[in-house]
Image 1 (cartoon, rainbow, N blue to C red):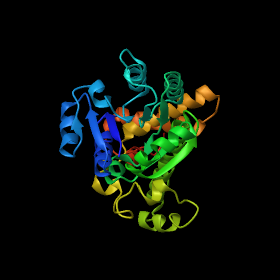
Image 2: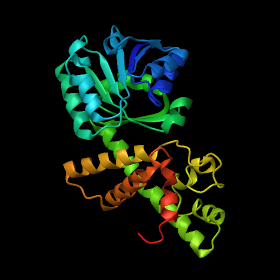
Image 3: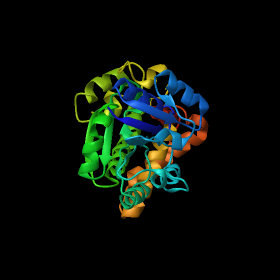
Length: 298
């Protein structure tokens, strides 16, 4: 089993580190939040005093951080991970960040003699706790084979998306689709209400026909048809509106960098931005139906 240094023990990283412990790995973890470190230690993660202590002597270092600026600082900054680590260590960044920063970090890892994977996740806090996350890994085949078993210790699906940055590209493209689809599903249910069509009936029809998608069948934005959906818990978040907005913004940055047009993605970003600005950042992203329902004309 591997010795793992884990940096970032928040709502996602904490359960992920705990699942590595359950899989038999020795995990030392650090987070700027003392409460997060304490919570992780209850689940068997050895509390580290700082970043250097967490990764000292480890075989693999995993990061789960909020944004690209944090990733760049942790890996490339003064006393960063690459600078203080022996050669040929494997680094896995599970954060969701911009593709350009991911590729910059990959290049620095290669120059420092290290293996690197960008491996963002899908599945939210529920999937992190249950160990059912999907990992989209970008990097060399050698790095992927080295990290694959560890990723399976935290999830049930692991896909090698391609070279450096491909994991981030896959995550952003996936969530671009999801954000657009959720708004379309919300609009359809609101229209059904206006037309006097029962939402349960629309669900029964659409879930078995061409309107079917994950936003409908697993995260249905109206209470009732999908018992596990956040709509049945006042939109208590599985994946927050703020996180969806973050991913749609990153997709927009990637599109601009690549010279790609995403008109629906841009509109979805603008709508989630408005939803968040109205004070709903912490709600599940399916809660945007509340805004759709309240605005007959936009």
